[in-house]
Length: 109
Image 1 (cartoon, rainbow, N blue to C red):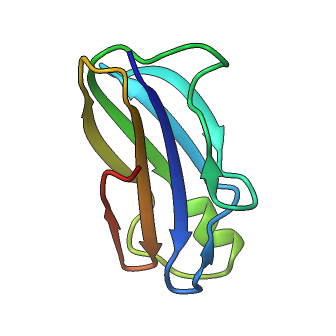
Image 2 (image 1 turned 60 degrees about the horizontal axis):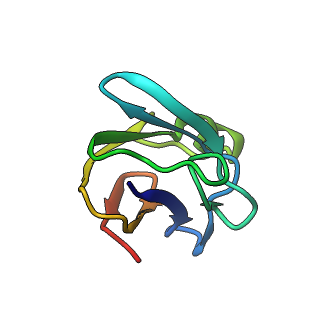
């Protein structure tokens, strides 16, 4: 079983994106919800010591509220990243690089 973290950066401003609600789901079931901290990070999606089982997961980033709070228009109200956690015991890190009209992601370390 594995662990998971994320980090959101507002590339248009060159700053971390704080206060974004992120929902972790597996098979449409909510595993956990958390908000990005002042550094744009959610360091762990499970309680201390809990691990994620292998399978397909989604991270749902509720970015509409982030853009509205900043008084900026955006094309995407929500960004969903679907990924797989394997049978290993690795740490998975899924960064999101965000701008009002585009985004990118990758498997980080």
